[in-house]
Length: 417
Image (tube, rainbow, N blue to C red; front, side, top):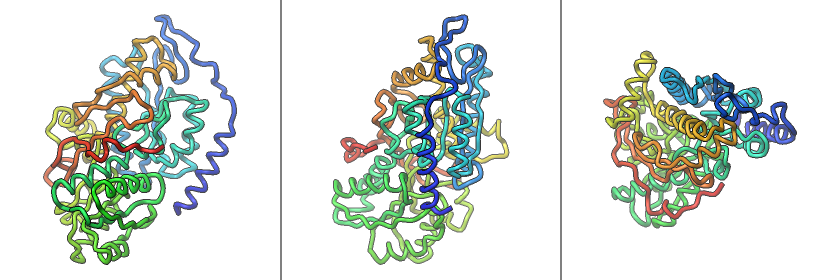
């Protein structure tokens, strides 16, 4: 589906959803169980129902599968330990295949039945229902998306640095390592829409602060061959390239650049890499001079959190490989679980109770590389990024080359919803 058509469909569905008024479940949340805990949508005396809206067959299929299985692992471990608030966790998964109609239909189906969502892949789809979430549904959604457009909501909460801040941190790394210098021109290949354009905002801010020029190359998610873009970047004389797209586009860009003798470093946002790429023709080029940023340690890191998760995940899914989607999914589920525990302590397992509980969580997730602070809905949970480099000998295909840090240019930068 062309992006323009996708955007039109999402916009049309947004109007439909926003136009809905009232809810069959309105009034829920006033019930109390025998222990005095308030309950509402998705919560009974024995069960807490959560939803997952994922992509296991579309553009981000490999990511969606890893995120979902990691969250199912968290559910299994949590229930084996007795559940939360004397209740078992149930996770209902819907694969939307990165199709806007399926994504929004799945949200509409599950929303009345669940307390909230441990994942929702696709920032355009999350944005399409955000007004409804904020206005009437008010169930906590943890998107697998990092666009600054999602900031500002009490109920849609971004885990990690947004794309703009992540991009600033990437360019700071190149400058610190003297791979680029003041006066240089950098290239930026980016998807149309929230993801790419938010990353571009970060690149422009970093360029202004560091004295760089930016040469833009906008692409669509359906553009898989980066030959034309590499030719344009080469002609423009850029000294480095930022890619804010998917793994396929990143691999094509790096591979074509290597094949044509265009020898510059390439850096990508967290969703611009998949370890499967290392087994393709682009593998050698990715190993040579490609770098990725993220707000968690990679699954192959020797740290306590990734090491245990890698072992547990491999035991549960021995036929599936490891990638950073495992860490992202497990982290999101763990954050939701922490909010549930705090809400239980306050004897309020309603949606309002979960939202209040999340606002009290600070300094969470250090085992996975950095601490997250959820006290301010208008801010990402962290401004830090770890910088990683592909490594064929490491589980998950990435190794850390710079630990969690925030660039000076990112400290004062305000992401604009």
